[in-house]
Length: 165
Image (cartoon, rainbow, N blue to C red; front, side, top):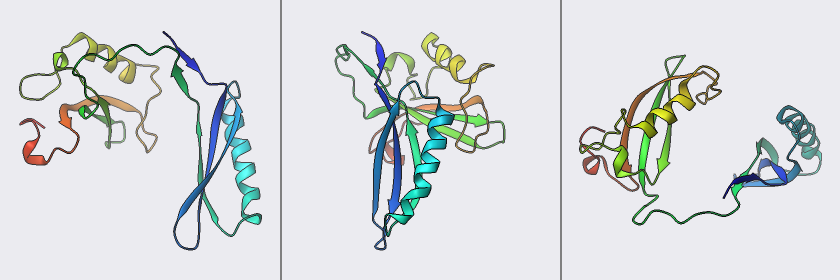
């Protein structure tokens, strides 16, 4: 079992038509292509498309994918609807949040908060926060520290959430 890269990265260019409907074009670039080179090519391609369509180009994205070549068996009882919510403070004072599906009970406290002393949580935080980490909020500001972490179930109302949400 290993994460292996797909042969190509995907460049997806998005459009909007007169009715407000969205569409897209996906083109691939070799996986070894540097992101800056692929993005420059995407910008050049996107600039040519308005002459071909009555739609407007609304943006594009670049995706480098890795897949598990031999996925293992999930732990019995694991559910992707059971999420760990991690809210991070960024250097600019704003927050960035991501969720981890199928959060294990072993990394949670009884009240629904994430146990910040758990070795697996400490290891994940180090990858996100430590010097040299490249992770940032959507504004581009560096992630500085974890401000809140708790359990949430998909389709959970505020009243149903754990008490220390």
